[in-house]
Amino acid sequence: MTMASVCDSVPPPVAAGEPLSELPGEVSVADGAGTLAGVVTEAQSGRPLRGADVSLLKEADAALASIGKTMPSATNGSFVLGPYPPGDYLLRIRAIGHHPQERPVTLRGGTVDTVRIAMRYYRCEGY
Image (cartoon, rainbow, N blue to C red; front, side, top):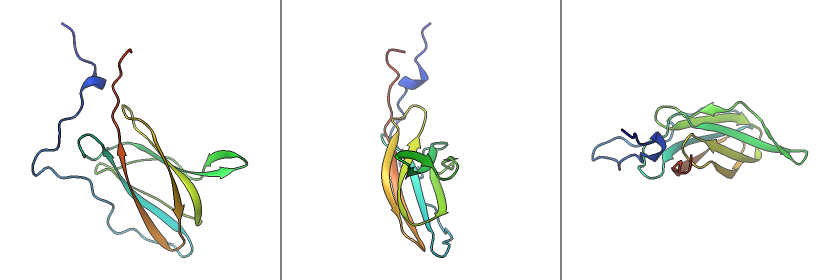
């Protein structure tokens, strides 16, 4: 009996009444620092993507360096990074079975900026 690979099972569409991902609620803001809050979803279904690795990177000496620890997205797909100094950063999200995402973000001092990331699923053909 041949079993299908876990990678080949695309999640079904969201059912009527099924809860979707929401941005984090109340997020504290530090004076002069910026915070990034967001939610990671599965692009095909719209469901929250739990456990995606979320990192904020800053260019330093022509190389990207992590400015904080990588954190997993929560059960509802949400994450909060910061507070960090205002400036330009690169948001990197990785999740098993999904194409990695990178997006430039600008943190403004004394505010919470928000972002939604939809991770595209990929099949593991040829493995």
